[in-house]
Amino acid sequence: MSNSNKPDSNLDPNLKARLLKETKNPYRGLRRTVWIALFGSAALGLFIMVTNVIAGDNVSINDLAIQTSALVIIGFLLFKDRSKEDADK
Image (tube, rainbow, N blue to C red; front, side, top):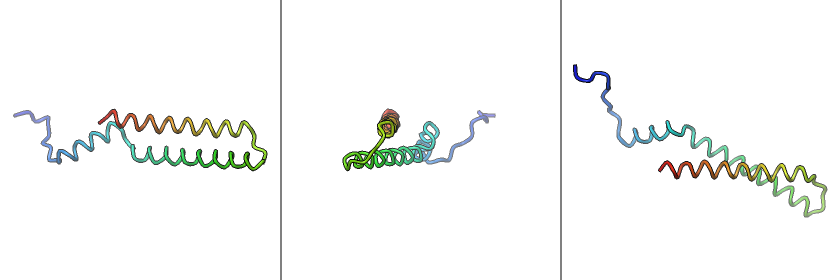
């Protein structure tokens, strides 16, 4: 018996490399889509609040702080996820 523990691999090397990359960072595409959608939502909310302030409407400072911090945090997470991908290459 010659090394019967290791099965023969009939996978294309490119497919195997892609699958190994996916196992290291699962759901990268979905995760990136969610981060971009949340970042866009936070940016749009902040833009609307700023235009309301410019128009002279009452906007709570707490609401502006929450919206700004959400934009910064989600932007950081998106950047961190992108940096991790660049480091994996």
